[in-house]
Length: 229
Image (cartoon, rainbow, N blue to C red; front, side):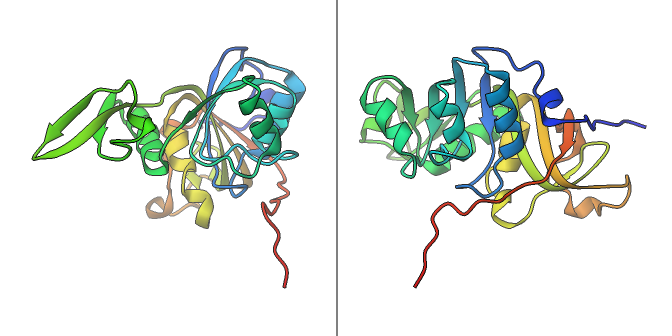
């Protein structure tokens, strides 16, 4: 039987090289592959391009890799919670490509579907459109956006079986399934490993054909912004 489980997060990211492009799942700090990110920090790879909806916070998630200066370029939609990101950006130390959130999701989906580019009205008439091809369809302007296809995708799932079928939970489902399909090699950290056949096929969000490695790892599930009354 196919068994995609590896022993540790460090083993799972063993062949991620310098200069790689990573597509990273998560929404805020929900559903981020925190153990895989920590393993990349330990590995010390550098000059990475990371495509992710968020850039973590200063001491968690992709913020750890920003702090260790491992990321050369961020492709992201929302980065407002990361002071180190702000510092590097304004100092000219970090290349940044801001993308409307829906466009970012569709760029990942297109990469996983083998679609090289698509037209969208989002961003027309704004700095987002600078340098991009613009066409008119039925009297409305659209700009051409290229798909995102990474060397590796890093995702965090709730459940998986040994064949790599993944189930995500609640808000963690926002970007993780899109990211999983958008990497040539998909690595998933999961909370719970179940026997093959235990997952209802109708409840599988990412089929195992997209997933190459799985690591079972405990997760802290940090709160991005704690509010109290």
